[in-house]
Length: 294
Image (cartoon, rainbow, N blue to C red; front, side, top):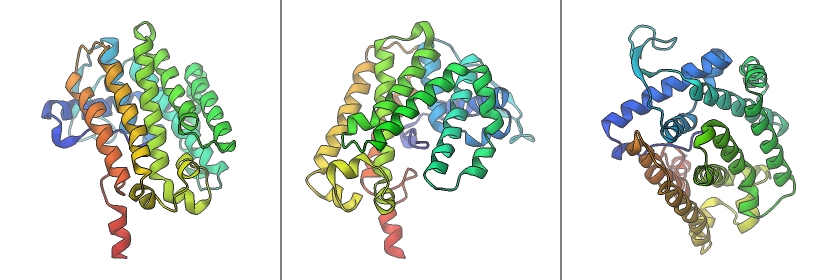
């Protein structure tokens, strides 16, 4: 679920790249304040993206100052100062990572040792941010039900993850939340689930694990699916989500950092989708070429 929300770096202004890195450090420090230093190991740019967009939608300008931290103890660097929204995002990040490793353990994969790193931080989330823990837990439970039912509907399969992000947006944005913000984050959450499922197509096929794309299209591999006429159906699913994102964005007021938000949502998500569909991983490394070399 993590690692897919990225900026389209070649089209990113220097000022926005600097801000993005500062926001990344800000979320990291927010995790440390809320969940302890161990929980910082689970930090991702996905939650940094949420920080960028949600600060913007709340109309809260981010204060950037030069600071030191545990990782950057010798040379100071630009970091966003921690506020309450950043702390909530830190709690969300920790809860998601904890439940991810819990799911890995239930699937028979190794995850017990990794989950221990986040156990204390997760307990802090349950104590200090019970609403965030409830949102994550209840929606992931619904996700598990959908997967156990072996639904072949992409919409039903992605609904719980999409609703989780939409519910969190309502909680985090408070009075700034509206139908457009909810629909925006619902579409983003749906994209995250589906792009993760498409990326895991071959791995899930080999393991016999649940994957809505396998049940819906039945191709022997992702490469075979993308080479077939059904590719157009897959492209339609993602293009419909991009339309929803653009449509809801057009109704929202962004007071700060619009360039960075637009880069991630309007360029970064389509870029990542193309990478996954052509057989590359999230970092742009072609998996098929690596197999051919072996």
